[in-house]
Length: 160
Ligand SMILES: [Zn+2]
Image (cartoon, rainbow, N blue to C red; front, side, top):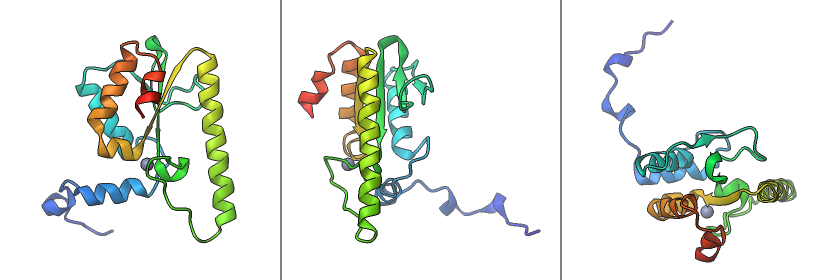
């Protein structure tokens, strides 16, 4: 049993991440729930007064990261690497390229199917990329607010 001096740990352990560290973290493409970009958006939504959302609602195709059932608005927060962001165009891994390529294709096909199912059930679908959240959180929040207030989905498609 080791006795770490947790109690007296230096501030280094709890210091906020620098911008560069945050970027490195999300660039790792963590697919799990409650990733940094998702938390960023949730905090922004909360502080922006857009509460009443559900997280990873199992009843919906693809379990959108955030959704507003009352507004039929589903939001996916996509990691740029895994879902192949059209904005920052993450590099293709140089080794095992066919493997990665097949994997990315499957991810993208699945994403498209989920969006399709949601739309045919009358939902609006918003995809927010991790890099967009990092670069323009206000802009993302603005778009969510607009859709939440009843703007058509084409609003953000045209704006993007
Ligand atoms: Zn991106």
